[in-house]
Image (cartoon, rainbow, N blue to C red; front, top):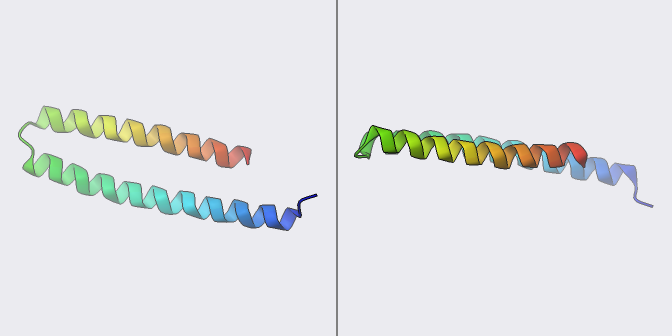
Length: 71
């Protein structure tokens, strides 16, 4: 049988990884959106690309968050 303390440690490590990745994603999204809107040719294309990027990120982080909740 698995020791509950080990599961708690793993759960805390996975939660820390989740929040660090969320922070990295947010910073990366801000940097990318700045460059897309500053150096891009079309605001419409930049907005579409940013929307798709954020939707994809939200789906991935939602899945990761649900998996953490189940774990």
